[in-house]
Length: 267
Image 1 (cartoon, rainbow, N blue to C red):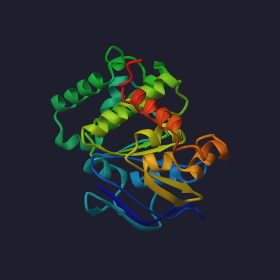
Image 2: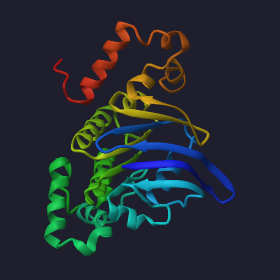
Image 3: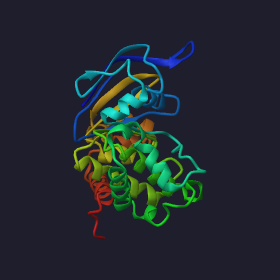
Image 4: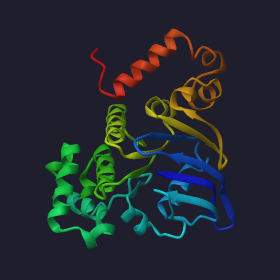
């Protein structure tokens, strides 16, 4: 679905991404983890067409898209949920959702758009009764739901999520991650850029670690979750604890986290 090779990008004279290689296949969650300033948001913006590539190749569904702007990429089925949500606070919730379908407006009827709004409300019931209210009146969690719902208005094949859990309460974070798993199960490819490495790796099929604009580690979500190097640097545990990552107690913890995220914990 998405194939990135040798991607370089940056701002003015500063290069931030130095030859990024990664891939996201249909129906899988790929986590991108790294510290602040590692290049996660720059990568998300470059993939979305908000920042021009300085070199390398971005292929979406087999077609090179480096020359294409953001509207063309959206029309092809690539949707981006930016860090900080970036909803239009003064517009209604409904109008924010309708903006999500703007790039496809020439081929959508009013009935199509209303059906898509209804589908978003089905996924996020908290939005249904507030469609006429200013989006700025929503809570932080509801605004994140709105930002994701706006991206879903294009019925994307690939969803690029940049820090979707930022600033949310733990219960809302778990809800957002369950929703991400549900989207993957519907066949949507997802690139999940997150500082919450533990939860990201718990649900990811594959994952990459980005440091200083370069991919330094990659593997399955489980492999990186059990990696002592990743645990010490990104999961908030010391070296001695990380060394015990493969024992039964750690395995139970990981399974329990996955069950919570997938809504399968009956405790």
